[in-house]
Image (cartoon, rainbow over all chains, first blue to last red; front, side):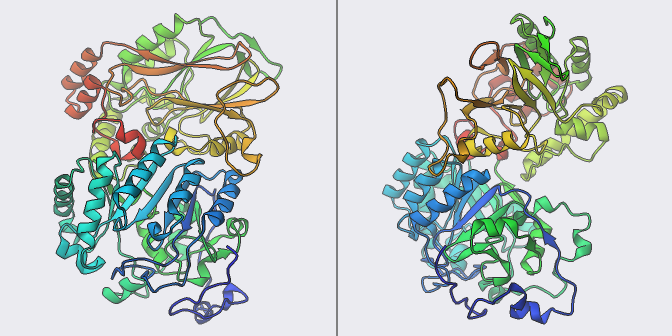
Length: 326
Length: 295
């Protein structure tokens, strides 16, 4: 929370004195300002706990995480604990941990221990660095808390060929191995997959996922499908947003703002607090240096990725958008 | 019922012991059994926290029981939908299978609820306030801020409850909506005590103020625990410490199952009544609650 702002890949190289001075906002100076969403209540507190550092370099990553992407750095257990303490008074309902790959953070298990003393915790993981000893410790942490510990495991296909083309060679087998270990000790991980197929294939893909997971001993799978976010690496893999894909005041006129994550969440990073986990590469989405500043600041729906949330709702929450938990 | 224990100067009733029913889901047989049971416990009042319809058969059968026994009802999301003729139950499912069953159930319930009963439901309040041994009580459906908010034991931090109690000015919070009963007690204002979290507070220390949340469970279907009984809560505020008891209600669940089949309700629903395990709506369960169920 105290580090200087990092250099953002492909973005500005120094923090602007004012958010309105970012290049993109200057460019759009002629159009009316984007609609804003005030924070209704801070229900979800997200932590960019491993920054943008990941052992994989997925071709669809909306913030282009990789082993070399140090734009955002790891958060220490102490840094997270300070924010957790602050969150207690704010009445936060859920904690989410993301990255990068959270389990590349050497403090991750300690961070989870601290979080689970206070409330429910969810970790978004690629599950490629979850050896048995980590899985065993996660089970201990889960059993030792009255709150739920959710593991959200990203797998982007029902075959190694399909998944590894996006997530990298060998990632399919390693993730499935971890799912098997998690199921073995009683977890019901939420398998998250980005929709890279035509809608008409969804039922077949879900069926294939259930079969695949049953084959590794996971018989009650909870499946979550995410829509693609056309930013970061995904913009290169498929396409960016079309100019019309933008949230306007008219679109928000009768829209229930509580469907959007930014109406009830903030993302804490080692370099400040953002309105949501999707817009990490967007300095205009930085809501403040401290949690209190970020709580007071409304979210501006000026990024085009906001359009995806407008269409699908708070896609980052555990239960939202499209899930198949049956 | 033995009547109101005493009335305060503000006109808000102050009870000694109350019975609180959660979602009824058209289970008129369980409702009748629970009313009998509660009356046998000499409660001063019975109240219901909404969701009269859904899931079960012949929704109109619960209304005469509620009226006959003078049971006030808080509006649930289902009641709101049925009363206003909305397109769906506002259950908030995202799983296609759950949405399928929710649509079947909602359409059936809407068609079988009389216009008179729908009109009655339109007048249900969003909350009911009363006192229990002098303590401020707020009864609602899901949460005091949102009718269809789920408050599960494993996803509801104590500091979050403390904030709700502050925001809505009550020391005892009563809800339902999830279908699984649980309770927690904590020291008032503990979230302001500083870092380190809010420990649960099982004991009673003289001079300290305590707060309590009770999810009273549901009469409509079992609690996903492999038992066929359904649950309600009895709160007794007559002593020094608030006493919360969850009461299992055995009823003729086989007769209900037969009635559901004769109404051609989904066999998955019938199986839940007969086995005590949820077969649908599983997506809403957090991992911890889901893991202890069968499906």
